Image (cartoon, rainbow, N blue to C red; front, side, top):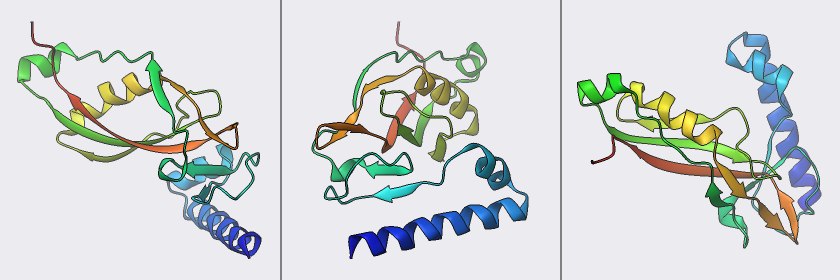
Length: 150
């Protein structure tokens, strides 16, 4: 039963990637460079397939931020007084690095996206685990991008 559901989900994602690639949009680049993602929320599924991306809410051992976070707030934003929140979605790989393909879900100002994404690229996590094995995990994070008070 779970196997059938996974096959259907996998087929759905492959078809979605093919349709995006044929449309010629951003999906064309993604279809060439990335494996299709299969989102997993059931810990009874065995880890090991590189296509699986686990939902953090389904794990007992979720990714934990352990370092590498440094926000460089541009002077151009400081002079203009721009600050606000950015909500990002990304995948933490089995080594604890943030994979390329960070998605912006919401932002107070589009100019805040670049500093937030640059900060995430350097972030390091303790990877999430299923049955003791590290797995890729989909993470959603809200960041407040603003200059430091001095």
